Length: 111
Image (cartoon, rainbow, N blue to C red; front, side, top):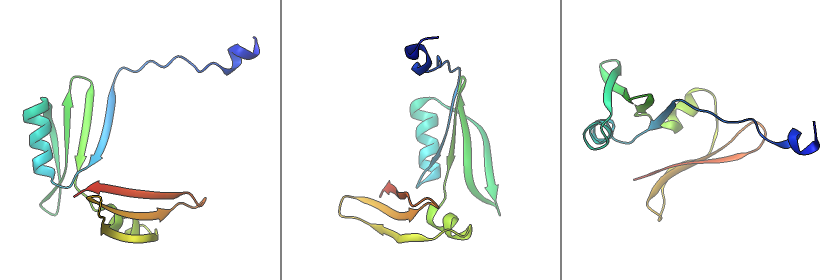
């Protein structure tokens, strides 16, 4: 095997795609993916009677839409935020955190 062959990545062959998206308005997002894009609702997930997520599919492609406040989830699991959620002048709501290796992450969503 030559040095060039060793550095070539393996062939990538995918047959399906699954994504999980956190949305700000679950019902509006479900309606858009269902009515505009053409996904079908597979399953609805509730907690304490409140809709929290919806699984959708179109052929082999699957999307899970969830409504959640990421900052609350991080704090509930013992994480520390470097900045609380705040609206910016660029029209996004964001917060900052740092992983155990010191990498800084910014989580943001449009308002």
